[in-house]
Length: 198
Image 1 (cartoon, rainbow, N blue to C red):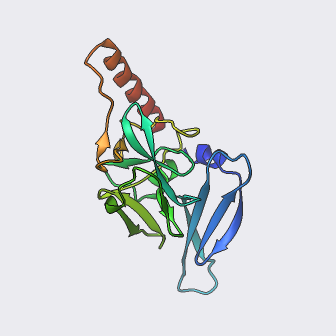
Image 2 (image 1 turned 90 degrees about the vertical axis):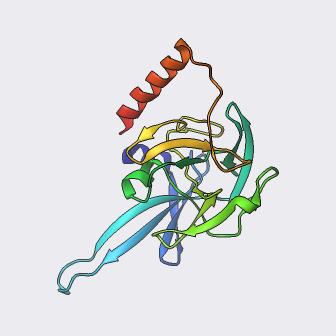
Image 3 (image 1 turned 120 degrees about the horizontal axis):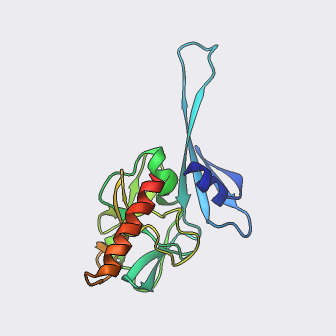
């Protein structure tokens, strides 16, 4: 999964306080990624400092927009990338490698239809602020190769069940599908896809 995420980013590094923002070059498949580096000092000065890296997403321009989709009116970034929420916890490096949190380093811009009363900025481990909507933290999914894709919808992972986010309520939304053979086939396909990813 980390190899997949790495291929999505073509970037140059820009220093930002204690973090480093990787700014994608023209034509990159994603917008921004931030590498928050944490140094662990050892008692002995002879030993080298150990560094761990977590890749997270920074929306540039920092924005939330509303997209009309088969799931209804859902949230996306200013670049048109679908946003998700989870029933579980995605604070680990492993989870955030596949589901980059939506963080901001400047005042966000909100498009028409976004309920600003539902938005909060939550400080996360890296020291940056992640956007939440209706009490749910927002994430992207690296399985979406471009704007207006929903490959993360209804995926069950060790980090919870993932759903796209209703722009009206902030709650997860799902398509209105009648129980049929096609619905069963879709569920089977999703399960198979999930088992490969995790």
